[in-house]
Every structure is written in structure tokens, then in C-alpha cells.
Image (cartoon, rainbow, N blue to C red; front, side, top):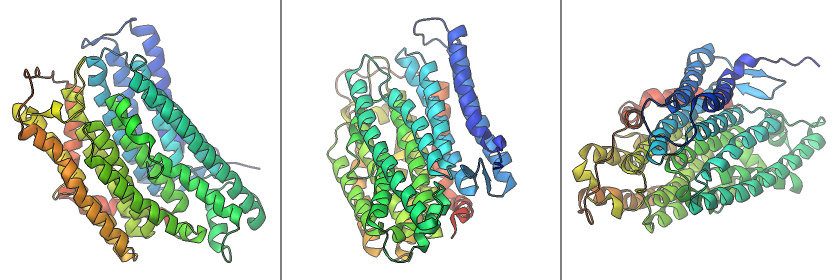
Length: 499
């Protein structure tokens, strides 16, 4: 059999993998042993290589692959490059690149060597890109493993911190269990494809066609296979009741790693759910009602639990769960408008969340993590620019115009109403109103209360951190001021999923 092996389609993934290897080599030969936080040391070279790898991959995705304008398949259908995949790849690369810049300041403050975390982040991002372009369940599983293993290591990268070790172990155990369920579901779907389609294949497109064209309800084992696959994906997007790992892992992980997981992993999971269960597939599998319940539960649990948190990272963790519920509302809409809304939502959430975590990284320093609301008291008054950044981030995450979060929610809710999910949309609006209470808590602490004890020293301004935060804030404003352009881009991207 003649299989087209077009490696040019996966150049972004290869660039990231090559950059990861180069970072390790440079660290071995150029970086002296022992931690350092001095500017100009060889660690700057490893950071530059990491960020440059992300930037080149993002530029190549837009200028070469997107400019081609056609959907292409290579490696016998294993690897798919279309507008849908390229949009999500850009979102992931933006989130990962900004997280890299955040991590530099945090690693220097805590005197932690940077090469290993940056290498792991590059490899995990490469795995995400492979998942997004997966045209086959085998490629999807391989990408999932390439993504997950480095993130388990990143979560537990502070070996002297019990919370970090606990976060890594919890994520590893629960993530492995979810992956096993997903793999078993793939096996059942493969068997169904063999029985119903005549030729057993792991091709996602072929399996979707067999499911949609199947006359009557699916056999029990096929329904179970689809359910197990969906559960594995819902775990990654932190949907309730598969969310229990999220608060502990987000709180215990290093702050830049938490930022990275909250945006890049969520965007990847949204892309995979849309790719596998988009269009009429979800209804044909008989899973539409189940996902309705999961979306509703996710929005309720995420928003209500966020109200009770005193730790800012845990609050952002539960809010991340709630945002996963809003994304599932767009998936349920099963229309081009709903799918485009999901794409726009992931981009808006990425830049808004990075800005919020950037403030936490900036205010943290060696031996002093800013994690509770009390530790934010009065800091907005003392550092007005920092307070402005947090204000923009929180208002966008609430969904207040003219910031990106408002138009992201508007696009999804409008599509859901158009598809008949009026009750779910009303619930989404009510839970979104609840989010006002906890998203305003950091702003109340920063601007309307006084510091406790001696004033904290002024944090050292890190140019790379400032660059990441500036990009995130500008993007949050621009996406909100000019939403039509980016919604049109998202709408053009989902044409690749049209049935």
C-alpha cells in the first residue's frame, strides 16, 4: 500500500520536538551546575530557544499551512491539517508561548533550573498539536500520551514541595485511569466499525460516517465505547463529575504550570471533543442528553465552589471548570455558529487567564507565593498598573463588555438558543452571574482593603513577564473591541467539520 508521508505538514510539531532536544543539549554543555537567577546567564539561551521554537511554529502555521487554504491528509489518514486544526494550534501555541515567558520570572524568583521545565513544556505542546491534527484514534492516543506524561512531570517539578508532589501523583493516577477508560472505549468503537463498516478501521471520519448512517440505536457495546471515550475527554477539560483532580493539581503545581494547564490543555480537549463528537455524531451516539447534564453540572459546580475558596489559584481552578461547562454548551449546539463560538471562546479564555496568572507570578517572589486573597490586600493601590491588568483579566473572565470574554459567551449562548437549548442557556446565564461575586473578590482585596502587616517589597519587574502580560492584555482588549474579525476567522475554520 502506497502511503503519502508528507512531513511538511507536521513541521510545527517537529520544530517543537527539535527545540526540546536542543534545550537539553544546551543545558548540558552551557549551563553551569546549581541554580541561578542572574540576567545574562546561559539559561537565557535555553529560554530563547524555547520561545523561538514556539514562535517559529506559530508563524509557520499561519504563513505557510493556513495560507495554503486546503485541507490535507497525510500518513494514511493519521494526520489531518485543515483550518479547524490550524486555529486550535494557534491558540495552543499562544497559550504555551506566553506560559513560557511567565515561567522564566517564576523560575528565577525561586532559583529553579529552567531547562527541564521548558523542555517538558515544548514536548507537551507538541503532543497537543498531534492530538489536534489526529485523523485516527491511534494518533489521538499517541498525542495524548506525549502531552500527558510531560505535564505530570511539570506538576510535580518542585520535588521539595509536598503539595507539588501530591499534585503530580494525583494527576498521574487519575489521568492514567481516564486514559485507560478512553483506550477501552476506542477498542469498543473499533469493534463496532469492523462489524458495521465491513472493514475495521480507526479512522475518525470513517467511524463517524458509520455511526451517523447506522439505522436505529447503536448496540450497547458501541454506546459504551462512545461513552468511555467521551469520559476520557471530559476529564481533560475538567468537566464535572470528572473534575475532582483540578483544584488540588492547580493549587499544588508551580503557578506558570497551572497557567499552562488551564489554557493549553483545555483548548486541546475542546478541539478533540469537537473533532470526534461534532455535528450529528453526538446525537447519533445517544450521548446528547448525557452531555447536557454534564454541561449543566459543570457550570453549577465550578461557579458555586469558586465562591467558597480563599486561595486564588483554587478559585481560578474552579472557574476553569465552569468555563469548561460553557465550552460544552457550544459543543451541544452542534451548529457552525456553536462550533465557531467554541473556537473564539478558547482564544478569549486563553489570553484572559494568562493575564490573571501573570499578576500572581509578578507579585510572587522567592519564599513568598501570592495565593490567597489576603495576600492581595492593598496591592492594587500600591501598584496601579498591576491592579489594572488584574481588573481587565477579571472583567473579561466574568464576561463584561467590551472585553473578549463577553463576546465569547454571547457567541456560544446565541448558538445554543438557536439550536433549541434555551433552558441550558438560561442556566449558563445564571451561573455566569454567580461568577461576578468571586471574580470581583481579587479586585476588592487589591483596591478596597489595606495590607496586613508590613508592606510587601516592590516586586522586581521582569521584562519577559511584562511582555507576556502585555500581549495577553492587549489581545483581551482587541478581541473584545473587534470581535467580528476573529469570529469570522473561527467561522471559516469550522467549515472543515461540515457534514
